[in-house]
Image (cartoon, rainbow, N blue to C red; front, side):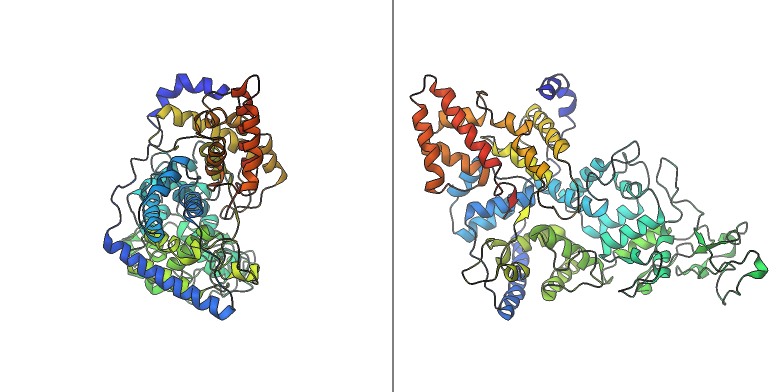
Length: 585
């Protein structure tokens, strides 16, 4: 209760800054946009069906409406659907296909979607919340807020990436600079993350030596890192200065200039390669005369891209040059996001698929160069659609969640091999939930109304305090892009955690434990509502019977209201501690 008491006096101050979801665009997809997405869905379905036929697997049974809503809400909105939303879904007219299409559009228009999507992208760009703690200069939350606002406005992925790579200013005022700050403004770290996050390749594996399994060389990685060499290392502002080179050890140095190996033609005295930035076009007055080369024992590395140099725009300063038509990072950003860059579109398409299915088409998602796609045709279709439609990520999400594979249950038909079915995306994998959706779902599953941006600000503030308490106890660890199975400590956080006990306690007259038995027309209806709230399904008869009997028996207790609330408290606590609740399936 400490945070509840603290929330009251400061609520007025913080409500104004709370996320109210008004940055979400209200315009639904047009009929033409939906038709185009449906065409992509059909192509994906065909590609998957061919793989199923070739491997001799059959897709799992299709989910019913409620199970589909739970899967969709957890993936796109980061929480479970409310009882209110489930009732509205069941009352909706039309065929199952029409209801699900409407459900997808509703989810994509919900203010919670860009927030959830932004968190997924932030994990790719800077890692999870525990990767680097916020400090005076680093503000991960501001980055997530900024990403959410950009996604809500429909800003394309290539424009976001260009801003992330090139942004200048303070991390609070220019949130995109948190990409640079998160990696300590280190050219080596920035190059590695740029390649992994935006191109899906591990060029940084060639940091110390040529890549043992791919064609990347140490020079490839060093040239990429050199694009970030002029980012100011200590200034509070992120900015790109006019001078600065990537300076590395020169292992060919022998103690004096005369003792060095002779440098090949076109190389600097320290052996650094010439610029790949078309810097030869620079006027002599733009070159640095006071800095002819690196100090003894060091070498400068010129900025150079590891492949497709023809996509690199001309005009950025090369080795030893101060000014150009473009800054180095701007040139790199345009090269990374060029529509003809062979890795840019597949990288984000592969990650979107992995986010929604729990496993990417190429695993790991940053090994596109050495990995083998589980379905090459599907990956190519996604990448091609991205290029053709301006890198619209929401369009891809709409198409993927409309596929037959996304509607498949986690169970397989009799006689089918479960491992083979999951590998072919014929059965949906059982995905552990991260701390965030667990926390959001916990609060929603113990509420009779929908927790969203329409709630009164103080209510959302109190809810934020409960969520923060749960996240503090559980933490967020492991692979930032793939949730890991729950540990014993995770289970204990649900079994004995203060938030779970607080939300299910029987002596709260406004809590679900007291209100469900009091408001439901029958005991069976009260039990059914509890299952819908927690698991988005109705109970089997043998699941419901014990609690219906206990609720009926409690009517003869000396204090029937308290006794019935205690029964419902037991049921809610048990449901929230099931594996079924803690996974998306």
